[in-house]
Amino acid sequence: MQSQPGSSFAGCHVLAEFTGVDRDLANDRVRLRHLLRDAVERAGATVCDMVDKRFEPHGVTVLALLAESHASIHSYPERGAMFVDVFTCGESADAEEAVRLLKQAVGAADAHVHTVFRGAGKQIVEPMALGITRTWELTDVLCDVHTDFQHLVIGRTEQGISLFSDSDRQSTEFSQLVYHEALMVPAMLLAETVDRVLIIGSGEGVASQMAVAAGAAHVDHVDIDREAVRLCAEHLPYGYTLAELARAEAGLGPVKVHYTDGYEFVAGYSGPRYDVVVIDLPDERSDAAQHNRLYGADFMKLCGDIGVIVVGQAGCPTLWRNETLLRSWERFGETFGTVVYFGSDEHEWAFLSGTAGVLENPLATMTARLETLPYRCQTIDAAALAAATTPPMSLRENSR
Image (cartoon, rainbow, N blue to C red):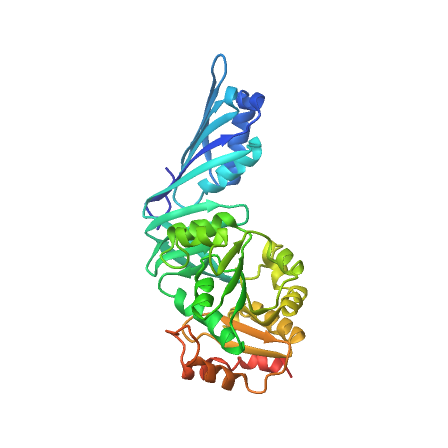
């Protein structure tokens, strides 16, 4: 077993069942040996030795002895299937990545994957900015799944049960209410009525619940990742319950869930105008992530065409990680006649609300409506509104 100074006693054990594998490949010990070695090495493991055996009339076992532990394949050619077992200790190799690469290499049509974390638990290293990361310690992993769109992890941290997407913290039991109220409440206060609401993303379901509590009779919740939304309902103690989600999927109440692409839904929408359109997505990526399109100026304009108030999570105002906020501020300013900033004083995110018309005194409007909003805020009062609606100087200077 590989051991490094300061390393923790921890391991990751991934068990997988691949189906839909080519039968000839599943019976070829030489090719399977090569593919297993390539997958584990690309995932950071060091191969010490390998053995393989072909059985009669069919079937192959391949075993790789790793410096980090072991990896194996046992195939069933007659069923086009194979069992895969990868266990790595320490932090130098990624067992989950090895299984993903092997699934791709053998061309499996489907995979059932179960991950068990052993020893000291799991760490998630969250990128913050260039050269800066934040480490989350998970004492228990409730869900670790690669959906068609993201790597989703739900586990217990010091902030309670927490949700991560592609290593980015999305929400935690401790702070989610602060986040969701900062997202939803200012926009709902700016709207003259809160009857029809469109929510794009926000898979936990808290935003939908807040909209209904604020009086919305019709909430369209659009999320492209069906599996992620259902896993959130299953494992998170906030947001949709499984029963609530089932009703929303069936449209049996004020909330209707649509599992589709947000851009396509908005571009093709021809129904009544929404009072509020909410865009709540993972942070904009530097690479070509699928959801990046939903941060663009074209999409903002489409949302403004179908909604009176458009609100979105706009990034972090901290100077060393404010690139997303600067871009969002510019796009909102190009698209809307009025842009209202709300920087949460107890969270790290800022939110922007935009509307086509010119509002003379948005703060006065929000403050006046705060007392009559059917949803009762727990983390925002009039003083918080006044303090949070002044943008950082860097944004105000960009507006001149």
